[in-house]
Image (cartoon, helix red, strand yellow):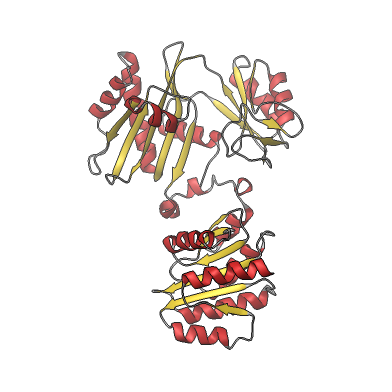
Length: 395
């Protein structure tokens, strides 16, 4: 789940992370009112979409840039009017772009120096870690690749949490001294409290900036949240903007299905993330192109399988479906019943290959065979991949 920049600022303010003041607006008039409230001069209007590169983006109406510095409320209204309701295309959105329904009006700052700072789950040592760098405002992956010596890493003890001495250690490594070190300790501690309290898996501040008046502030942030903890984060869930997501992924989440759309034409329905990845790989190896990642989990019901089929068939590029189920927890016969119900309810007319293995597999295969539907059974995964690729090619 992603959140907008204005929502990140709301979290910053709630947990005491220093950040420039800002207000969100849904109309040009609201943007003007926000500018007047914030003080007029030295403001920035920023389009709110789930994508980077907004400043260098172009709207489909021809307006250039999703980030503009302004000095009056009239300018804020004018710029917001050109952004709101328009589609912004950046290097991260793809050619279709994203519709802008909100803008952030915020105080602009004069930056003296930019840094990178993040707290994330480091799976290599099974603990949270700080990642920081003196090279802020740029792609941190490039910094790690070209100048790894500029990456600062500090592990956080799982029981003790982030300690003040660690904050000072990181601040010193960034070259922060005196009052700036004190500000850094306060900001890092607040970020860690935020990270823990709202069950983040990552908080990335880029840039973390020193202003010309010697203040340390978080200018922009990216949040990742632990999906398994969202049940206890009602306020975070309320920040979800479904209009920014693929409608198929939204529909899948309502049935507790894990779905990601891809560019191919062979859809996959699999139980288990690892098995789903292997299924996509073997489709590609066999000469096909997977149309999606779809994991129905370890205990899918007939209703979930039917919902999965409907989501799959919502992609006009799909020309065939491969179902690959290993029945450990799952009963193959229940899946078979769900497949038949889904095929009948959706009036399935494209090739369908099913590979079942595991718990109650004999009954499952018999159910499929007795259905009278055009379902091709496969003995193993390699056989299934070859059959669906061949069927799609022949269709």
